[in-house]
Length: 111
Image 1 (cartoon, helix red, strand yellow):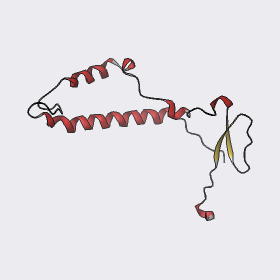
Image 2 (cartoon, one colour):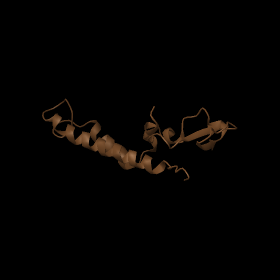
Image 3 (cartoon, helix red, strand yellow):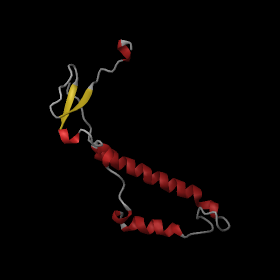
Image 4 (cartoon, rainbow, N blue to C red):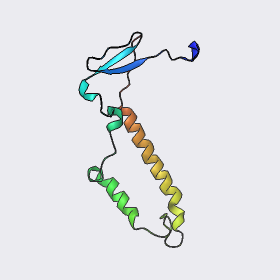
């Protein structure tokens, strides 16, 4: 690889008593973390039992709905709510991503 294409920021997580390579910034983690999924990837969405009551009510509100605004193959006009449902789901996903980004610590390399 050409020199210009090579990355100059080299940060490596090492575990236990492993040696840190030369010209590399190392973050030392305990040996017990070696084979674990990194913390930033461990968090998962809340299970249904731990969801706030407002979220549970909202999901129950749409479970048996049919007709106009329901995004259901049953009943006349059931397809009309599909776009609204997609938008709501996208907003919830975006909110979860923002919350996860706020919880993930940023590591800055010393200069």
